Image 1 (cartoon, rainbow, N blue to C red):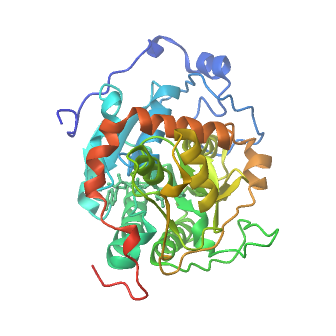
Image 2: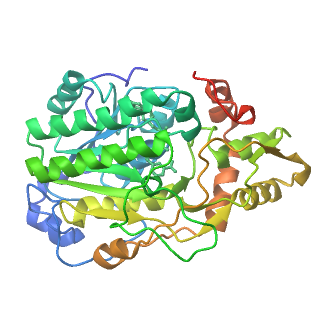
Length: 397
Ligand SMILES: NC(=O)c1ccc[n+]([C@@H]2O[C@H](COP(=O)([O-])OP(=O)(O)OC[C@H]3O[C@@H](n4cnc5c(N)ncnc54)[C@H](O)[C@@H]3O)[C@@H](O)[C@H]2O)c1
C-alpha cells in the first residue's frame, strides 16, 4: 500500500505549535506535560475520561510493534484519536495475523513500517528514522493452537524479538519501553477457587505460547534490573473487539454462526476466560504510559468470566442462530482451565477501571463482525490451524 513505507509524513491536526507548553499542560491536565519524559511516573492517580483528545508537550513518538494486529491496531487508532499531535509508527512483520487493512482508515494519521522485531538493524532504522522516544511492544505470535504445531516460531518472535527490541531501546537510550503480556504466564487456576493471580504470583506457563510470553517478561525485567531500562509491563486477560483475527474464539464463533457453520467448542466447555474489551486494554496501557511507575508490572482485567459454552450461547442468541450449531471437538493439548487476574494495583495506583460491560461489548463486537464481512471473509483461508483436528499427539507442522 502506498502508505506502507518508511519516512511518510504524518499529517497532524490542530495548531499546537502556537501554544506554550505550560498552557497545554494546564489546559488538559496531563501529568508531566512539560517534561521530556511525560510518561514517567506521576504521583497521584488522576481521573481517566473515557473519551476526548489529550495533548501534551512535547508530543510523543511511539513505535508500536505488532501495530497491524488485533490489539496493536486498536491501540494505534485509540492513540491517534486521543493524542493527535503524537507520532505513531506501527512496526509489523505482516504475518498471517498482521493486516494493513486494520489500519486503512488511519492512512493519514499513522505510519506503517513493515519490519521484523527479530531484525535489530531494521528496528533500529525505524526508531532512528522517526526519532522514536517510546516503544510499545505488542508484536507476538499469539495463537496458542499454532504454538503447539510450531513452537519454535513463538520462541523466536516472542522471546528473541522482545529481547531484540529491548536492546534497540537500550543502545539508543530511549526514555521508555512498554511490554504487553498476558495472564497466561501464570499457568491456570482450578475452576472452583476464589484465587486470582497477583503481580507477585510465580510464573508457571503450561503451553509454548505461555512459556514464550513468560520468557519475554523475564527479558524485560532483566533489562530493567541489569541495564536500568525504563520499562513497564502489563499482563492482560483475554481481549475481544473489532479486528481480531477469525481464528480466536469470539470472531471464529461469530463468523461461523453468520454462515450457519458449526461452532467448534473444546470438550472442556466449562473452561473459562476473563474477558476485557480491547478499548479498555488500550486505556490501561495509556494509563501506565502516562502515570505508571517505571520498573513495575500492572495487571489488566475486568473480573468478568465466561465459559466457552456461555460465549457460544451468547453469540448464537445475538445472531438468532440455533444452538444445534454447537459442535464438541477434542481439547487442544495443554488447554488451560481458567485464568483470573487481581487488578487492584492498577485500579488503586492509576485509577484505571474497565468502562465497557461484557454484554454491551460482546453485542457491539458481534454486530461489528456482522457488518464487516468484507474484512474477515478473506482472512478465513489464512488461518493456519484447523481447530477440529486435534488428536492426542499433534504432528509438527
Ligand atoms: N488477544 C488477547 O486476548 C491477548 C491478551 C493478553 C495479551 N495479549 C498480547 O497482546 C499482544 C497482541 O496480541 P494480538 O491478539 O493483537 O495478536 P495478533 O496475532 O492479532 O497480532 C500480532 C501482530 O504481531 C505481528 N508480528 C508477529 N511476528 C512479528 C515479528 N517477528 N515482527 C514484527 N511483528 C510481528 C503480526 O503480524 C501481528 O500484526 C501479544 O503480545 C499478545 O501476547 C493478547
